[in-house]
Image (cartoon, rainbow, N blue to C red):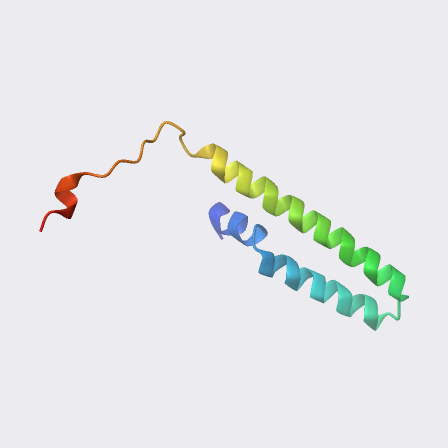
Length: 78
């Protein structure tokens, strides 16, 4: 697996929802109280949100900022 693929997966909301679902299922399997389940879900959500934010900021900062977008009129001539 390439580094880019790993970073994309870590930044995926679907990935963090899957992790939460697996942890919730394991906690429920071991008959943990509801309060414990809520705390674990909150912790995973916080970590997931933080990872997504850090990855998206890193990607945004890695792009050159001196790129100028322009439109050439020759592109629209028929």
